[in-house]
Image 1 (cartoon, helix red, strand yellow):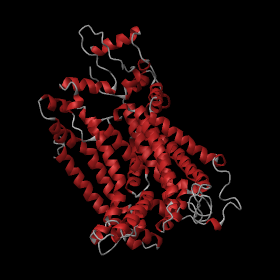
Image 2: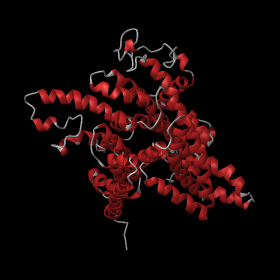
Image 3: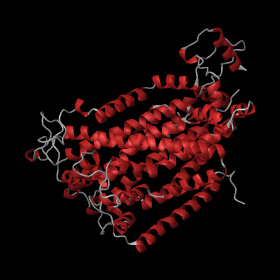
Image 4: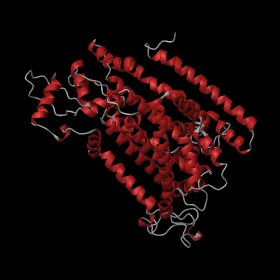
Amino acid sequence: MLRPFSWNAWASTPPVTSASTSGASGVRALHRTHAGYRAADRHRAGFRDGRRHHPRRLAGLRKDKFVDNLVRFSTVLLIAFPVFVFGTLAQVFIGLEMGLRLREADWVPSWFAQMFTVTYNSEYPWLSLMLPGLVLGAFSLAAIARLTRTSLIENLRSDYVRTARAKGLTVSRTVGVHTLRNSLIPVVTYIGIDIGLLLGGALVTEGIFNIPGVGQLVFQAIQANDSTVILGVVTIPTVVFLVANLAVDILYAALDPRIRYE
Amino acid sequence: MSDVLAAQDTGTGEGVTRGDKNRSLWGEVRYELMRNPVFWISSVLVLVILSMAFAPQLWASTSPTASGACSLSHYRERPSSQHPFGFTATGCDMWSSVVWGTGKSVIVAILVTVATLVTGVALGTLAGFFGGFGDTIVSRITDVFFGLPFILGAIVFLALFPKRNVLTISLVLAIFGWTSLTRVMRGSVIATKQKDYVDAARALGASNFFIIRRHILANSIAPVIVLATIGLGAYIGAEATLTFLGVGYQRPTVSWGLLVAEGQNLALAGYWHLLVIPCAFIVVTVLSFILLGDALRDALDPRTR
């Protein structure tokens, strides 16, 4: 009755969206569309007006609701900002305009104003790297949010979720312990790849905020044809990349107990 | 059982809404798109952007590169009622600079997308359908490109060209862009070729070429179309990034990346419009292509909706 979706089946059978109320047994007709699966799943799992029992925090749980649409749109907006656009705008409006006011204000401690910076400041390396870090991480933030959402929605339809609910586990435990944990596998994969790219590819952010980082070093070495430096500087991110991906592989087994490395 | 009941109901024609009609895959996609407001908004924006790219005189009568169009006496003038977007750092009208700069980014994006689409679909289909040694080669090459930071690689390549134009920038972007489409196409073809209808066609004696043309391509192209639409926006952003870094378009060409680059320092001195206006055009353009791709994905693959 509940057939898993496939391109083939979908293309060959017309989707039935209108609910049939004329069934002799009075059973509510199961819609064959995607939304129908969810309604049917909820019905069978025992929460008839499932919406009220859903927690209201994560976008993936509140599909097509306001929070979900908000998260979807704001992540698309973040993705649409090329790094150099976001970086220059953040530098001018957050670093300069807000930073100037904070530095002038008496009640703001001077270390706090260092977080709103136009350039990297070697006296406050951590604080002055916060704004560039935010700019650099914005794209990954949006990508991870979307990935988690898609993965969570996909997994919420699994049999084990229904079983967990049917056994009487609370929604927060079902989602937090069972579903979210399994849904993190594509997210962790993405993070593993992203670490390498963030490390070596932070060229634009480093350029805008004048950070003497790996990307700048490689860029200068390439322009100066300094192959010794290029070799050394490319090797270190590669090693970090490999270690990160090893950690990701180990995390798979920690996240999903069905995965075992013999 | 109850879906059988529902199916019988639609057969009698009672209570049939538009959504119940028997449609082909693409008919269903068209129906889904028509009722999606995001699709309408983004496609109107895309049409506006394309008309700016190919017929800028409709939007701004004088080109900023025409003689006498710019005057240093208007150097970085702020927006006024006559010129609502102000003037650029070189004394050109900002609105006409931005409009006439649209084409430079859009043409690169279209060239790169066409090039990557052709390579990706061809290589991905061959690698996915036939497998074997060729598949291994293609997969390993895409793996190598996957590990390269795109911007660094593009800088190295573009630095080789002393004079850069539409073709050199497109070429470099395509060199770094073809792998993602190839990967997706390959995966999609592998999933499609295991379907029963492919076996049925083969049992009926269809040749490999016929199966690819008739069954594989039509049923595996959907994710590639979505990715290519999003790619149009991504390449516009990438071109602007490279130009901003100084390895893309060069003066006297008018382009968005150059406008941002020359506005950056002046914006720190308080001339915000020099930075905000070209940035806004870049963001809206990239956003509308991404939203269009998202709407297409929603229509093509209901699982991720």
